[in-house]
Amino acid sequence: MRTWRGMITTAAGLGLALLVACGGSSSSSSTGAMNVHLVDGPISGYQQVNVNIQSVEIGSGSGWITLGTPNKTINLLNLTGGVSETLASGATLPAGHYSQMRLILGSGNSVMLADGTTQPLTVPSGMQTGIKLIVSFDVAAGTTADVWIDFDAAHSIQVVQAGASGQYLLRPTIRAFDKTVTGSIHGTLTDGATAAGLPGAMVYAETLDGSGHAAVVRSTVTDATGAYTLDLLPVGATYYVVSQPVVGTTPKAYDAKASDAFALSGTSPVFTYNAAFAGDAATGTISGGVTPVATSAQSDAVNLLQSLATPTSGTFTFIVGSGLVTVGTSTETYAFSNVPAGAYSVQAVRSTLNPDGTTTVSLSTVQSAAVTAGATTTVNLGL
Image (cartoon, rainbow, N blue to C red):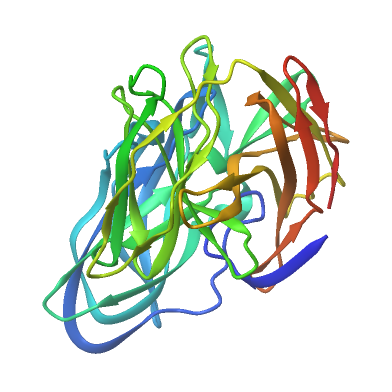
């Protein structure tokens, strides 16, 4: 197991709400303005994810500044594919540097499941002071900063088994971006045999660290024509577009692909990546357990990894699937279905909130998982 410790850039629920260790400050009495917009990434298994947002605030040395008071329940799943919700418009604030924001939530949070039933979405008591996140925004006098908050629903809803029923807990994963320093990658995914677009395919924008470990920065799903846009990608970094499409009501799976490296910069902030995928009828399942069971201050996820050759950049191990585990009274479980036959690996990721507001992220040992057609491969992970 590998661990590291540092300030978290996401806010996570059930004791994982971010406690920010440093505050923003204003440099003068001059003022600027800020717009704040909310977007979301895709999630399967839900028709709605409804979150009541009372206000959005930004931190200063003397306290919190209220930027907007939407005071409304927002279905996060409406905020994909370029759709956004404005939380604050033209809010005035002192010019200067800011390093913390928070969303104040109200009651009435819920999820609508795939079968149409509605269940409460529990917001832990530790988040009564708001979902907090670290930012780094400079507001210049006489200018308007355009801030976008990505509420990643796919990594924010954790199911906790309670007997025969399930409880749905909000463990928010949130990132915020100043749009003036971001870029995007767009394109179309198609069936290599028919040239038809692949609608509803998951697409990731990933980075690789110095050791070659992949991390998902943004995700989206393709539209009805197979087109996608991965936006709000901070410039000054290199990204790979990765997808292992599974589309249709009778799921059809395709072998995964990864793009070449795209280095986004202020002068080259936009790239295009189109890809044609080969269908694979030979699919199986990977499932297993994670031990020990997470405490109330922890959140667990599992990544599905595969070694993929890019067109010219080389061969790397990328994340082709990711999801939170299901927490039981004494066990945790995960599963990836409709996985094309081949060689994979899996790794568990545990985030633990420390009393000082920092987070320790623990990774299980990477375990190999060979998928064969029509079979389930069991791989248990220990943290």
